[in-house]
Length: 247
Image (tube, rainbow, N blue to C red; front, side, top):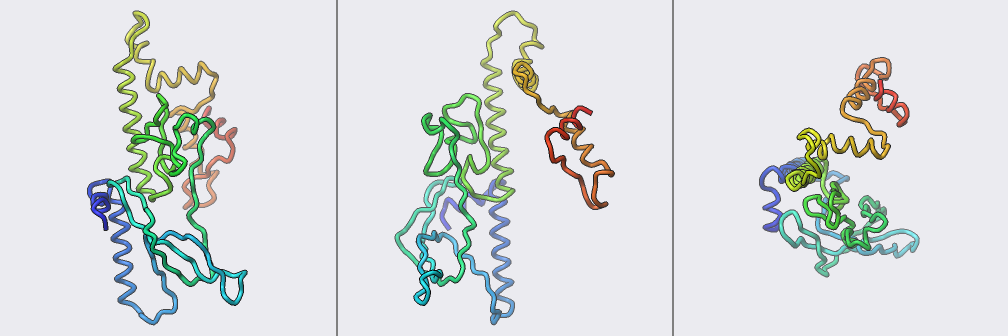
């Protein structure tokens, strides 16, 4: 384990990885204490990158081996990446399942504005704040790449939310009144009031918090549920959702 990996396990941000590590360690001990003659085994190999498939000697239409390159982690904590070592290993295989293949793609104009890192498949950002854009933020895989679990996404989203709040505070502090408007009018330029005014002025139909609560209540109506254990029945069309929102 690298020093950066050890650093990532510390504090609140490292709790998801610590739980995963404990789960793997406990599962490993459980396996070694069970029947050693079991015909079925699951072996996890980390830091191995598939580079090619080799056909069977007896049938060139069937896979026989998977060639993997050993990789190693380099970089600072929370910004490590796997790099090849040149060392390869061959694994006998009758079946190959491709389960990791997500790569983010840029929106039109992003590459020309240097807002997208094609090699990593992510939008260029700092704590979720997109470079080259005044009020654009990202979170999830398009922010950091296809890594992590649900817990990782929670911490990642909090990081972006903090960036949004810092951005709004900065905008509010730097705002210059255009006239001797009242304090209420000045405050309405930003935050929820400003957003609602902007959407209304552009004829954008939106759902506010009170309307969302109506949707939630409607989805939990006993008449919609399929069983007593069913928590809610989601609306399947935007039209039905908006009808519920308007009450």
